[in-house]
Figure 1 (cartoon, rainbow, N blue to C red):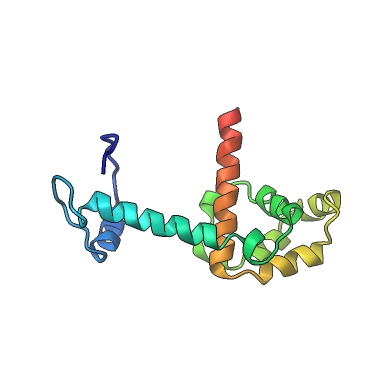
Figure 2: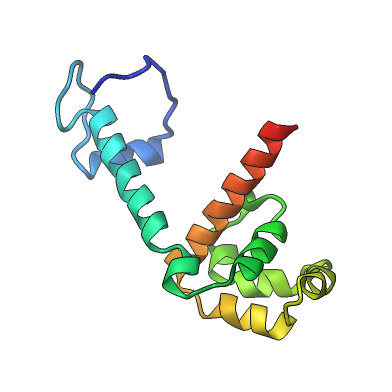
Length: 140
């Protein structure tokens, strides 16, 4: 697998995660080199996020999707607990009523739709918010 020669610092907990999946320090190509196992893990993560897009799995409207993404100003900071209880986080947002009203969305319908999502669907939504913010940062 050709690479860019990039060095990535991986914390010990993440090394342990990869090691449990067969990763080992090894020069050259091997299906169990850290790079190969990391690549497989990232591909699995990508598949999960694509498969669990709530617009596809739950029919979440584009308006509700945009509202959710917009209400997460720093989605990369969310803890597992906050992702799990994403509707409660949205309910506490001081911008929810104004943003929902501006988009023609009933707050109760939005919160019910987010509450109904599974954890992987919420995680996919958070990932989409991260991507939207990164795209915005690149435009600046």
